[in-house]
Image (cartoon, rainbow, N blue to C red; front, side):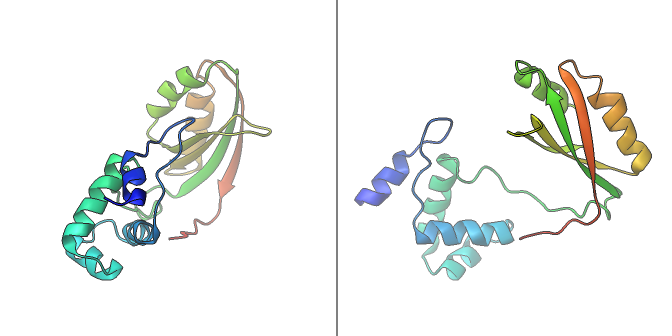
Length: 163
């Protein structure tokens, strides 16, 4: 194993830790899988111009190091019956983040959550069937979570997929 591979294989991720260095081949693998996570290893190896054995070992290392965290399916929210989407920001008590995430994970309409800096403390992507459903999520569920001091809702008129 060369120096670069050795450093990459032992790289760790997480708060305060450096992510493993990705060489050009690793970056191409990540781009290809981002475009199509269902692609076979044979096709991936062909597109990246490496052997299947090399593709398997690189995929394993990328998974083990936490670079690849899973393979997902992209769903068109409107076609799946979720015609209303919004970014909802929360202002929360500063010591309530861990407790808050437990509550937010139990709300199926919350697709993504992030702790952010700025005027708000938390940003959520919320998907709902319609405006009434969104209203119920924001006013009936989010406002009822202990530690939530206020919300601000911004409707999404059009989702634009970057990938």
